[in-house]
Structures are given as structure tokens and as C-alpha cells.
Length: 208
Figure: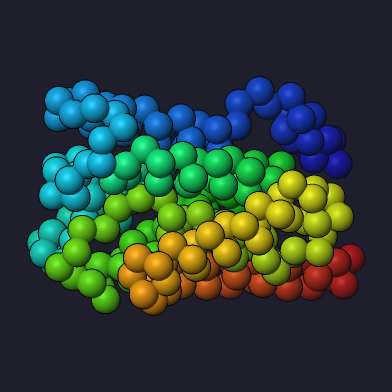
């Protein structure tokens, strides 16, 4: 009981946010890549250029560069795509972090992102996969299962979940003429994690 109280106090007094840190790393990494390659920050980056900074394709993955499935989530083709991702990441990730904990948001983000990136490469091995969209779709999938609860506690987050899904579907259909596999798999992973945790919480509640 005392240990739980201490953990609760530490959580409330924690002054840093892992969600904010991820957002800052994504922004700083794009600036670093642009400066290192001698290109303007606002210029669309060449996907082949991003391979040198962690982006992934089928050939590299077949060579055993599995670390790219994680690092590629921090590389972005252009600033506008990055800003959209960062806004949704901050809103959705911060809500999950505050209500389900730091480890939960990290697991949903990175596991969903890794599975999503792998799916992108698996179905489109010749294309370069990058960006945090797959991971953010995982966050959205996680919150969809708890949507009505989210809506009651934070209408901003509820609206963000809807907008994230709508905008991502629109962009996929507009540019790729289909829903991208990476986004679908990322979303499904988020849904599955949410269902497992929800069921586990209910089971624990019944045994007490």
C-alpha cells in the first residue's frame, strides 16, 4: 500500500513527459538530417537520402538491418508531414501516458510502429519506409477501444482520434489510392493491445 502511494506521488511529480521527448527527438532529427545533407529544412527530402539516416526498405531488412524498423520512425520526408504527426502524437500520446502510464504509451507507440513499418516493407519491398504515421495509427487504435471514455474525459483527445483516422485515410486514398498496409497493421496492433489490457483489468477487478 505504501509503495503504491509512493509510486503515485512520483508519477504526479514527474516533470518530464516521454511523449514530449519523442516529439522533440523527431523534430531535432529532421533538422539534423537537413543540415547534415545541406538542404533547407522546409524542402522535401529524397527518400533515398533518408536511407543513410535510418529509413528502411526490403533489401536492407533482408540484410538484417532490423534496427531500422525503430529508427525509421524518426525520419520524415518533409516538415509538413512531420508536423501533422507530431501534433497527433502529442495529443494522443500524452493522454495515454497520463491515463495508462509511461510504459504503456512507449509499448503502444514503438511496438505498433515497428509492426507497421515491417508491414510497409513486407508489402512494398521496393519502397523506402519512413515516418511516425504507423506508430501514431497504433496510438489511435488503442484509444478507439476507449473512445467514449476518452470523449468524456477529454473532448480534444476524442476529436484528435477521429481527425487522425479521417486524415490518414484521406491521405492514403488520395496519394496511394488504397489504405496503406503499415497504417492498417499499426492501427490493429493498437486495438489489440487496448483490448488485452482492458480484459486483463476487468479480470483483475473480478478477482479482488
